[in-house]
Length: 244
Image (tube, rainbow, N blue to C red; front, side, top):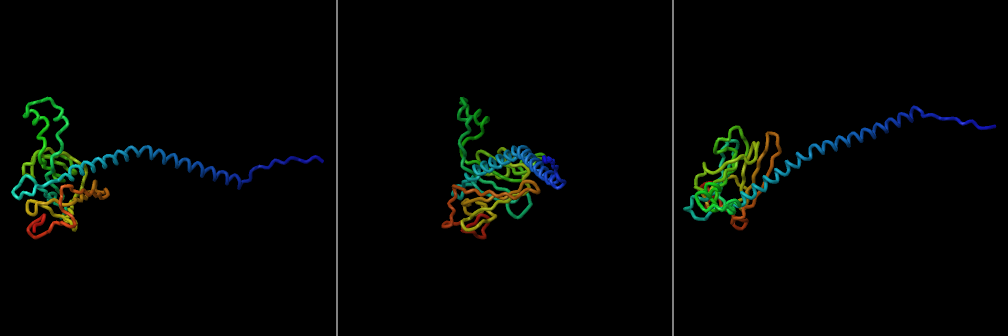
């Protein structure tokens, strides 16, 4: 007898298994697609933020590492002074120091102007010691701006409280403190006007951006310092910055 062909359909269990597998595959694809969109949307902002952070660190390093103080006890035009001006904490939140002047401005070098007064008015003083100040408390009127302010005065005039050009260097900095390596330990006081005319071997900057931002730390080695483990600064009770 001829056999009979029987067509067998899917059972309920098999259909449920197929539907479950399809759901898993669709869910995985949707998750991967969402992750890809999120990455594509946030990556430019993250990259921009990273580049800004790196540029800020490079600029800080360039400015701070050039700190310089002459050994002349009678020289009042070079100094390295840490102070607490905002009243937010016990550690200093303001740092003012002199630095060996940077190379002359490119525009100054390329200018065909021969009149000294015109060059001075257009580009400012060139060469010599410059005064650099980092603080949460601006010297001038900053309006509603808040954060870390940078002030540069060329040349240094011995007055730590005024002068120069000021700008908001890092916006939204809510806390700032400075520490200094004296050859044996990190200290929170330094003032060459009241102690030895030596600058720290390194500076540690601890700051926070925004009320909920993570605490950040930068360490800068001062190339003009003579302080080391073998030649530390001897602290005394004579005043901040130490004395012998």
